[in-house]
Image (cartoon, rainbow, N blue to C red; front, side, top):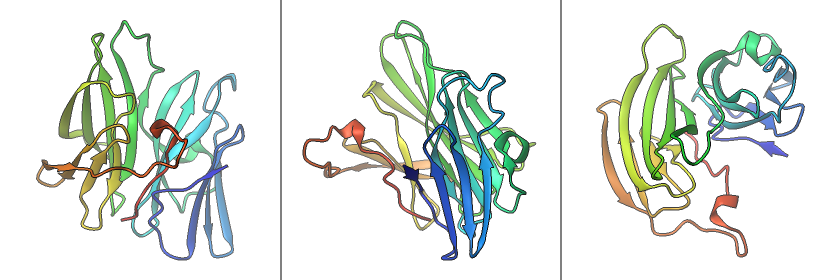
Length: 223
């Protein structure tokens, strides 16, 4: 299986993230291929590893993605696409790590969505914190892909009762973020520069017949 998105990149570039035991981020530029594998993400090699949440800057110079492991949890990475091929830990910058979710009786935190900014200098991360009572608070935070700067909170969304899926961040062509979920009818148009948001009502997300909403994924638009 291949997952690619939101792949906003020059026409000559293709970004792939195979979802398999030997997952890797692959960038194909003309006749040149670069690949960065998940080897070395765990000391034992244990756990199911995969890659999701792939996004690319407007000029194709920076790719962001999330690796998933039963041992280490979800980890967000930012990688310059001109980096030499190799293992992800050796070439990419680790932006955020979430431990595996705990049981329903304790507070749980997880990564819902990760999205690179159009110029590749920031990574927007949506994380959910779920209380023991089931209430969910979503935080959208900006991280510098160059490191050094402290994370900057963009906005928080109080979703009330947890709906089973967190918010997905989708880019718009004017540099704003659309936060939405398959399980809700309310979306938020977020301006990262002013840290303001506008509430929108979705008029139905199309779901194939016989498919539950949580089975639909990797629906993205490009910068």
